[in-house]
Length: 135
Image 1 (tube, one colour):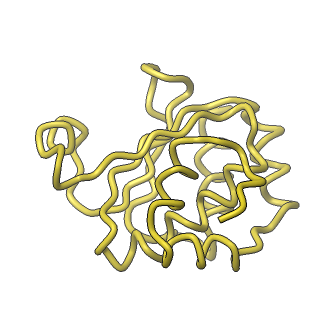
Image 2 (cartoon, one colour):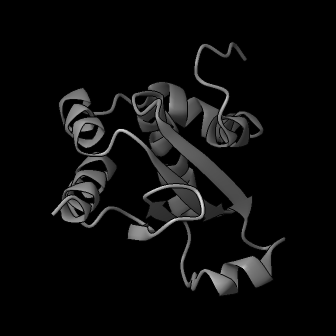
């Protein structure tokens, strides 16, 4: 697989699974909304428990990896939820994927996207989270 994207943990995760990578390649996020996210919060840290066999992870992790490309100041962390049950419990994770957005690594939680977007897209959910954090 050709890697023209950033070398983030999120991208490494999707590259390890051909199905994830195929969905990643096919996704075209809304750059207008992402630009608003970037303007509202130029940097943040996102932690995501995932599993390769989870349908919601298969749908949303590749999409978020595409979004991550347009958020260069953001850092991304993904971990296997089954292999890390203690961490999953400590973060209060009930359903996966859960994208937990922090103001910085080890910082204050700004919001979560649980399983699927509450709005029409992951981009819009991220925008709602960062706009709420800037008030």
